[in-house]
Length: 367
Image (cartoon, rainbow, N blue to C red; front, side, top):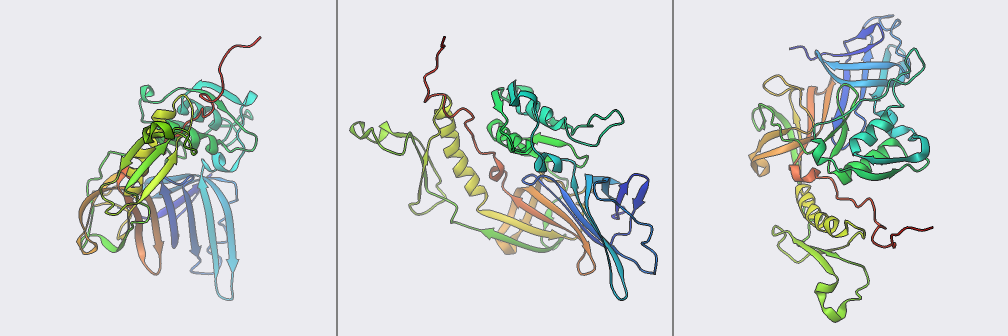
């Protein structure tokens, strides 16, 4: 199976890149790439011109990995060489760079999918009729599981992704891009790759950051920061408590609950989220493997589960989630992939109360 990287822009398709870096992840938007080429004989690269802003498709073998735009085209010369460096990002870069647009500045009674689709529709290449092509947005989460958000307000200067990321946390989904340049809303992945990562099989280098400083023995959620319920005891102000039995000494975190009509539910979810997420991130695995693909020939894919065995690093067996993958090729290390892996619980979106003032302000009809 060919593992050459090709970049296609318009009618031009170029391969033979000697320096390759393509990075995708579930906690980064957009996916991006940086590739380079040095000519082997004078004039070899004279006809290569990829203009900044051009639409492009980056593929590894026959499989697309990034669909987007060229951000930088950097030719350089020296006494005895001529090289080209190209950097670019996926279509979703416009959702991060640009200001959100929506007539009236308010979207009512919409799910995060509908909000994202409305905000993404104004971006993308311009069609012959002058209208934007739009950035596609999809999800694998049932519509019944996506809450309807009563009101989404767009503040001037906010990017579309600022808003989408906030709505995604409330809806308990991750927001990241796919190889076709579209935005994808997904829960933590449950699909497992056909083969895994194991010492003595495909691992070139690996390390694990085992940490304890992020973890607490107790996560206590209080109604407010000033205890006005001392006369009724701790139960008056304490709303919820979650414990982490893995922490062997007393370490307490206090969380002031977000007020609002959903305050209690959010407070409970926040305590459980803090415990699970912090435990998941107390063991970060970084691995360099010897191929862009697993043993079945599939490219390593973010938000997929993979069995990992690194007994010399005190990790004999675990099923972890790929949070980020970087495909690399250079003269020093050849063709490799760098993977970041953690427990799935590390990627549960933070619970968020979108209406923090609802319970604080009297509601009624006036006039």
